[in-house]
Image (cartoon, helix red, strand yellow):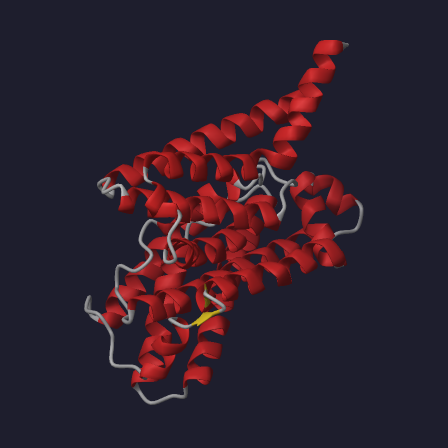
Length: 318
């Protein structure tokens, strides 16, 4: 009985505080190795700015993983939306109109994923692996494999702004996260998505339209990816054909580290936000410690394996 209580207490502690514990541990380690990297006026804004795109992509990825699926096309969607928004602004369209079109295009690309998954019955891994290549190919064709720049300075100026020292990009990411925290906790559709992820068959028998909720999930993922692409466009100052390449790894890592179960039905967006900050902190730490960027991929892959292993261990003990 005592052993069982200890296991249960570990499960509860890890579920509630595991992500925050990892974040605090990283800060302590970095502060011990290079204190000036953490305790400086520019460090926090830099970490938040680097984390903003990760958080936005991870929030979208969270919904795909929540229904025991995955969205491998988030990086390509971000790049394609970034190109479309940049092209519209270069052609003289108002900034606000171009941004709204970008968000809508992101949602439409997500809808394509959802419709294909529903119509074919294939796992989201297969569908989004295919659309990942398709969306990236469309970006390369549209850009001619060249950067698109020359859009209004007001756009990049706005994206680079800070309010009370906090980058506007981070505020955008936090605002999106807050909207979807409300969506998942206060709406019937949000609660139904958890039910679909927990057990699709049981959800169907209880009257939940599984295909409709699957479509909604991927629309949300596409929309978040579109917003991430717009933020990335403003930060870089140009639409790069290779923009956000490999960012799906960061999104998946942030969601899983943030406590989202890879087996569906469990997770919270607050944890995903912390997961995105952890990824941003790791990237920042490797930059200030002059660690080669190639090692970042090793770290991210290791974190995914470790997080999913812990998730499986905790789930098996419940």
